[in-house]
Length: 335
Ligand code: NCD
Image 1: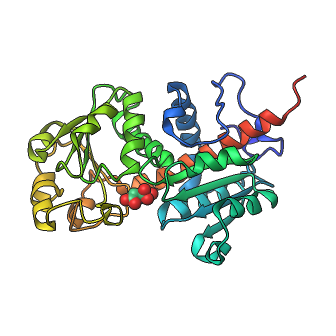
Image 2 (image 1 turned 30 degrees about the vertical axis):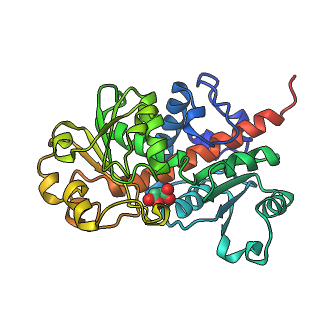
């Protein structure tokens, strides 16, 4: 990116290269809303942002004067810090609101909390909630940008983007014909749903592997194959995405026993040794080390778990910039 672009005080909406395909989304609620071109726009921008994540070299002013609020009704380490870091790297004014520290505990409703934040001039609301659809409802309610940071079992769009960005950087931009295994607690996973949408858009083959309680046959309706035999499936794959066992969502119906689950579906050293040499090992985190994935496996050279976290900041820089640009463009008078 040209230096004059990244350091300019000209509003970002007027600074996008005229030749790049337009990004028209003011919110990021679901990856189902993105076109194939949209993925290229967000990945190109994330690529340009990536060097800044580990070695910030210049002050970027893309979000100067913009207020970004992280409103998290569920626990989070990486997603919350990642959005905050992304916004700060673009000089945004970040307010981090884990709900434990808010008036929600005094009985304020979700909509009242949102109205209060909006009335203070919040430009971007980054929201995580246990109920699917909350980000979409808040996007309709006020004039701001909303980014879904995980809603129930529905979606986690920035995680889907950072996962596919990581696969493309390692395997090349063309994922068509590549096989991605998504293993374990798929039914409870918003990460899996966003990954499936993004991978389908890229023409990849997605196989979900696990016991029927966690990987029901009906998942095939999402455009994936369902498999039960992890050992057979892992012989010919390009990527294995291990998911956290989300006990908080299982209500006792998830798995027969930890020992049985490990026997069938944990990524152990033994199983990892049978993966093709080029195959990537991924996990969105937080991982239950010793349950779905062994600590030695997470530390193997073909594990890209730490890279996923780094890429997450670059993806969120790109998303924050794109949605705010759209909002500013929408507000500009048409000549
Ligand atoms: C995931 C989430 O919260 O959806 N974590 C994350 O954001 N990296 C996955 C999980 O909780 O298992």
